[in-house]
Image 1 (tube, helix red, strand yellow):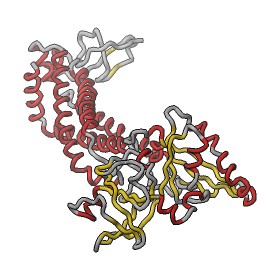
Image 2 (cartoon, one colour):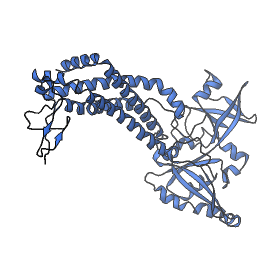
Image 3 (cartoon, helix red, strand yellow):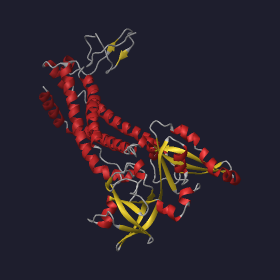
Image 4 (cartoon, helix red, strand yellow):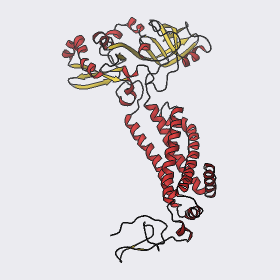
Length: 448
């Protein structure tokens, strides 16, 4: 039976090539746009969720008030805040801090200008789940005069050599031994680096990097205990600056405050100074999500309109099939098969279009968008089922109600007298129990 429906569907589509092409084009454009936007939304909402303890990691934002006016709200802040949070509040399990820098890095006779160097503590690997290709994430991996480099950096500097134990020089004055190689940083991470070097080297040069309170260059992150209330902890944070620099703040008429920002909220919900990179926007996610649904809905509506507009052309086919013994269910299934086949072909073309357009779309959206095959498979199944049902069922129910006797007689108009003699209805209104009617449709019509 399914084979019979497919044969009829293919024959009808080949006979009506123009109709087939217009519907195919409309569905393909709508589905391609929908899939690209959904993949982009999936990428944007996945930032930093790959970390094992992502839900319990918070960045400590810095706020500076002068004479009661907010002068600075920064993603980076006091160098000492993480350490004192760990000392004062038991719900803080661990903390880490880092400073981002640009440097000239030399290995042998090769010199590179690196723009993404982080001076970080060894606890960096205790909080963040950046896997290592080589090296152990223990307390010595970022000990003083040690460095961790990424796979890409290792290839640029050392080629096929083993980098472990090799020495690199920063700005011609500090040597660091390579103690680990980090796997390529995921694109959906707001923290990116090429080289990690020991934060202890900064402290060795100046205690300012360990004890400063007004410093907008150090980023601090804390790991809270499972179940800890971040809002309750945030309310206790004013105790720290008050305990250490309360007198200085009163004399200079300034105030320091700290805010905890969830790691998974940073990319979409944070827009303050000194962000590590340009963040996305939750508002854009909602807006483009609505646009994606509207584009797909319009494509489906266009299909339904075209299918319905061809109803008169298909009236004779329906009439002949009904006279030959086809039931209403048979007609519905045939038209659903036609819709399913058209949606299937459109989906296959759309997936090809997504693959071809992906590099351009990534560049336009400035996003590390990647094909997520699980999402693509789920979208394929969802769109095939919903598209076939939505675009096929309404036209199928509409066309299958044609009265075969009237269709074969060529009747296309009707004039019906109802309860009041002066009321007439023109073609297209539903009627019922009028044996002399010329209408193609048989529906109940409320009189009076």
